[in-house]
Image 1: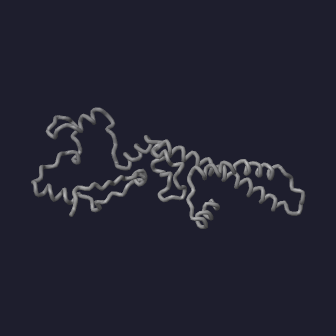
Image 2 (image 1 turned 120 degrees about the vertical axis):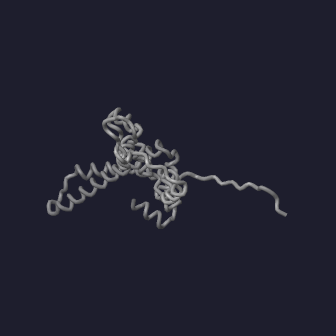
Image 3 (image 1 turned 90 degrees about the vertical axis):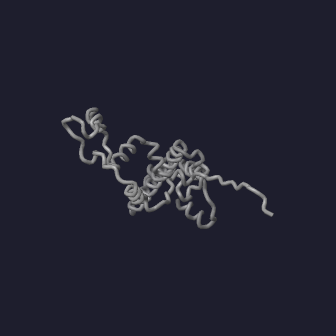
Length: 199
């Protein structure tokens, strides 16, 4: 990460996800060897064992973080390839928006859980029985012992002018829709055709 910040500020170049993953993976054996050497070597000088313990902690901790970061990067990149973007390996890892859109990756991993969560957020509950489902479609003068709640009763027919006013009030205030993470990456092809010659 430090090298990425230095490279970005000094060289002003981009680095692809593949080169980042390959670089991290190639450093993995060196971190592992260094961690094993520091963990198994005994410290000869008994006067300052705290310094050696801090060195051991730092080397083993940085190796564990390096392995975790490398594994997470490769797994998230493979999930992104499977979810929607096969070219994620050649994308700039520092780009904005991120080459790994988390909403899409999470929706790819657990689509049913997210569907359940979204339906709960909207306040939608499925009917609990077939009788209740059948009762929801009854017309108001039915002979059922249990009547549907007032919210399910049909509203009286409005006049044409009132209907237009209600539709105008229900329009959203913002007419611009913000694209989601997948749409931000989609390329739009624009072609200009010549319709006629101007003299």
